[in-house]
Length: 469
Ligand SMILES: Cc1cc2nc3c(=O)[nH]c(=O)nc-3n(C[C@H](O)[C@H](O)[C@H](O)COP(=O)(O)OP(=O)(O)OC[C@H]3O[C@@H](n4cnc5c(N)ncnc54)[C@H](O)[C@@H]3O)c2cc1C
Image 1 (spheres, rainbow, N blue to C red):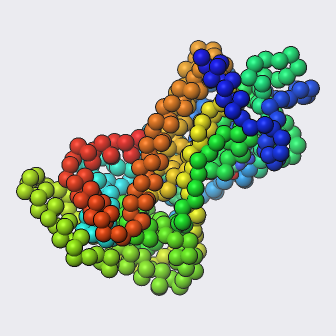
Image 2 (cartoon, rainbow, N blue to C red; image 1 turned 45 degrees about the vertical axis):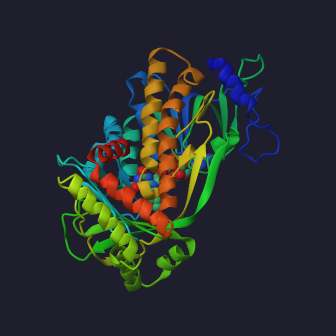
Image 3 (spheres, rainbow, N blue to C red; image 1 turned 45 degrees about the horizontal axis):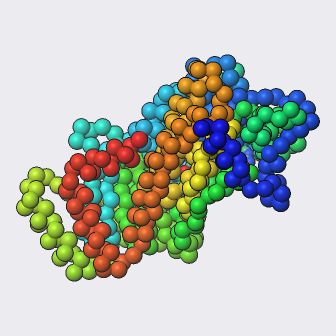
């Protein structure tokens, strides 16, 4: 069955000719004897580096040769910079558990992170809100600078340097796939050509090279993708006064969601998704105007209408009557006083999903397999979830002495993750569309939907459980 699936997947790949430098030619004959790795991870961003770490620390991989290829330079710090980075991620408890499993979370704790215990999400067009909180004071998640996570992963990669080789400033420029069945004059492994002309081979290639994945393109895997009409503006913000600052805030404006994520008692990180033109304006306007724009985006009621407010109030009364127990009350977000110089930056947003995550001797993880709008703060968490699943399947294969590149366990990974990731991608895309309008029927629908969800604790708990994986 697995062999049949493998063959059909490779037959589905496009013909080799005419597809640019990264294209596979599916056959490699007469090659000189390159180094053969058990696993090569192409792309050492947050997800690829964590994947190499997880394999390097897995006991069943102790006799395996692993290589991590990263086109960029090694990122090391002599000491933690005082200034916070403008790129941060909301890390779920499930992701923190994965990072703990190979020692990276301890480094993060020794550097810096901020736990949050509540999340308030509300609509700029009505009074509707949803408050996620943990009664037992457990952390809902953690805001961590991407550079801090990367630094922790680099330290843990160094700890397993006997098993994991890392090549920085090494770009893979070509991948050549083996035939699905052995041929006398062909190699059974994937061949990789690097930018400097050197070549190597691997029994399993893991593509972690981001949303424009060269690995995915070279394999001819279909990718459903579109660009959103939005860019995300990020910045590091100073609050007007010190607070407990343990709430993640997100307000849905008709132009896109704006989020304030806690970094310390006095600092928060901004992720404001808006039209490309407005994003460009926000990045270039003077500091005072920028701070006013943020405060107004969180506080202004300019998008409210009497009709929606009355309709929302009616449902609120009905809920209070039917369910007299406490429904989480609105809290006021902190106000912003100033922005860190040079911390403003914008990133175009899009959605992407690979039709297949695996092929024989190939697996895609992270943004190479799926790209999601940051409104749910799930992109890197989905990538870390991919790692947990793939390591689980590969570790079992290594323990049983199976071929790591075989479809028999790679399909297990694909099934696990596509189920989770497609649900998240669809829900995030739906939310993005539902909130990108101020049309009355849709505002009414989402107002009632949000209020009802806020009132139904088991539903909220289910959402929290799904998002904390
Ligand atoms: C504004 C914004 C806010 C976000 N906030 C959150 C959040 O709060 N929580 C969350 O979970 N997610 C968030 N995300 C999403 C998250 O940042 C991404 O999902 C995550 O960084 C993807 O990591 P990756 O390692 O898969 O890909 P990338 O970060 O794209 O890494 C790919 C790596 O591969 C390397 N590479 C590429 N091609 C080659 C090659 N040919 N050879 C060798 N190396 C190569 C690149 O140099 C790069 O280092 C956010 C995204 C944005 C834009």
